[in-house]
Image (cartoon, rainbow over all chains, first blue to last red; front, top):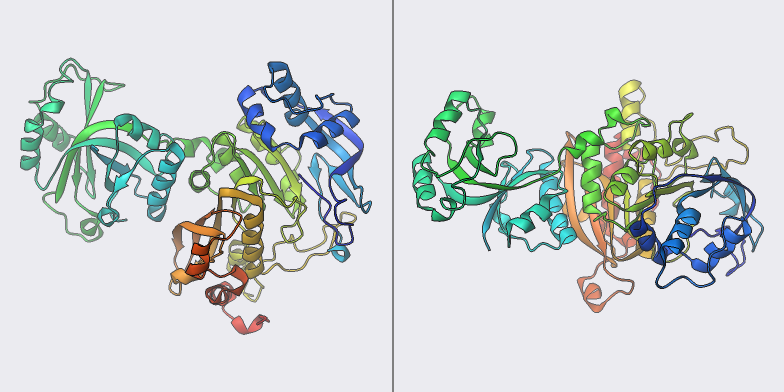
Amino acid sequence: MLQCHAKSCPQGQSYPLAIRNAELEQLDAEFNADFVTRLMPKLDWAVLRKTAFELGVAELPAEIPTEPTQADLQLIHKVALETRIKEADMVCNGCGHVYPIKDGVPNMLLQDHEI
Amino acid sequence: MPEYLVIFAQFHMDFRLPELESLAVLEGVELVYDRASYTDDHPFLIVNLKSDEDAQRLIRRSILIKEVVRLYADEKTFEDLLDVVRDTKEIHGPYQNSSFRFDVRAFGHTLSQEEQVERIELFCFLPCGAVKIKNPDVVFTYIEDYGTVFTRGHYRPEKPFRVLFGVLVAKGDRGLIHTYDLKKRKYLGTTSMDAELSLVMANQALARPGSFILDPFVGTGSFLITCAHYGAFTMGSDIDGRQIRGKGDRNIESNAVQYKLTNRVLDTLVADLAHHPWRQQPFWDAIVCDPPYGVRAGAKKLGRGQKSKVPPGPLEPKKPNGEQRYPQTVPYEMHDVIVDLIDFAGVHLVPGGRLVYWLPTITDEYTPEDIPTHPKFRLIANSAQIFGTWCRRLITMEKLHDEPSDKEAAQGAEALSASPAHAKFRSTYFKEAQGKLEQLKLSE
């Protein structure tokens, strides 16, 4: 959902941000199939899949399941709602800008000269 | 359609009809009423609804409606009312073996226990089963309206000018205000919004299971909590990361834990609305926020020291806070906040999505033209909470669609930044905020 917004960032390469040096945290969120089903259409599946794979969280199916099974939903629940990136760097592939994630809160502020 | 009596809380009057209408949209309930019959002075409104079930759905999450009563009599005097009730056969049949309770209400007056019993006893012709105070099968409601006009003076009217009788069919959800009472909340800030209005805002935003809601001025996350309560997935951003992270184990996340909403209060991030990182796509079903106009912060400063020349509060936490790589900030003028907010909503809301935000105005100088317009938006509601010389207005706007239509062009809706009404609004605001317009180097 987030993209690099530095002025100097080349067009078209500002999304997705790559995640580096991640320190993950597993949370316990109550599973609710309904929530996950509603969440799915809002997900950028390809990016989520790639990120989840790179972080070693889970291997999601290549295509977004049209009729998700309980197992699919559990898996998405785990990736989207139970995995938190505690500390990491989000790196723009276009310009290399680094956005730090600290205590689970991404800092998307640019330096004042970048806006 | 049968007649029902909506009994509002006599509080936040300007918000009551907008909430009622939002709930009708939310629940898909057909609601008909005469706008002219409504007044802020009374907590009553007669509406037409299809059924008791619709009434229950309509107010099941209402914060400003206490009850809905199926109305059987609406008369000038008690005697007339008794006659009408006596002749209303439909309430004589069904309750013959039902346990019942009688609620006697008076608006603008207090009836003593004896007076209440006196009234109830005159309804003894109603065929009913046994009295049961808790969870009876049926609750008869009798209301005397003495009006606020009288209570304001010393004159105490002998008789109500209107009496009503009906059967209770639905209750609102005002108890929720206590559930989310700020006094019980673990993490708070100076700008946390009280539970009642936060919940009303969630209703205005049509927060419901599956909707995605963003608060781009999240602060301590009041709206994330109330919107998530209704099933929405919520995210927030704020330029001040300190508010998000809080102190120790008290932060937005701990509030979500406190209310068991962690699987819906998704994430918060540090970002500036003026230079935001969100992808350019319609994503959010609602944007709900209390933008930082510096009114409350400014007002506080005025109250504390003698120096009132503090500029309207900047959006940012003012100074670099010592953290490394923290960028410099400049004051974010209110005009720009609103322009940015509405433009942002124009891009990032889905069509039909709602923007719900607070706008401060001066009570005396306010005109309806002060409300920002945007060709992509339709104004849904504008409710004032008055604090003497100034007030804040809860503005609800609906995004129509992504393409401007001919109809909008014909209406001549201007882009916000070009709106003359807005320029006026801005200067009005600044006058109020610090009393010295000249000090501000207004562009234009």
